[in-house]
Image 1 (tube, helix red, strand yellow):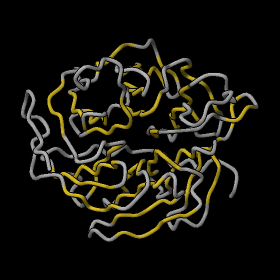
Image 2 (cartoon, helix red, strand yellow):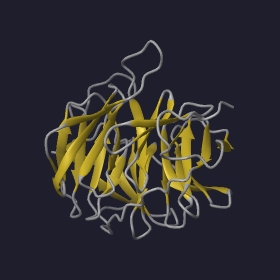
Image 3 (cartoon, helix red, strand yellow):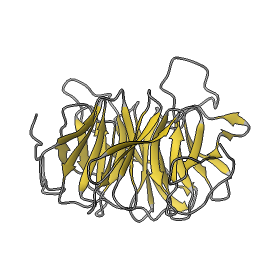
Length: 298
């Protein structure tokens, strides 16, 4: 296993080495930690959501997940997920009940909801790219959307090059969007719930040798606002001011990451066929999220 190199500063200091926690999956994605530090993740092709307990036990949480990808817990214990089949849905704490929160905009289905973040009001920001076989996009464009607590859906951004990962800063004043079709990570000022200002380039992801065009995937943040962005090189750690401080390497290419464990200092990384953990001195930020239940039933 490759060692994890220090790049510039001592941010996100390491307290261990990467550990392969679970393996044997087809493609892992969308990790999300509950209030106790248990981490849930998806095996997208197998359409199964798994629960990795803080004690390391692995159990299925939900099957038939409609290619669920990015997820986040609400304060009421419901797990909200972007389903690649075209919906944003919430699952009950036992995984048995499903409620559709959004499945269309202006009467048209979404392309393939990918990743999300929930603000303190209970509103949901999510990306809607498409990565499957070539087809006409239902929405006609790649977009970033906001589902208000009452269920109203608005398109906040359109035309980005395959928007993928999405996250708010800890103070929820900045919205970050990572694109798979561009090395530039975008940042938008949040002016009010569901409203954003002008786009700026937050950073340009470090590229593999000889490449200038690779983008990123998912991301998470710690309590200091540092961003942990998955890329072809590994997990890139960037300060809130846009400086690269670390590159965390793993045996497989990471797709997404979140902080979990009993103390919130373990980075869980979904990477192709496996889930890895890495102990850090940094602690993950936990979003307050809201308790909106949305509408609709399974």
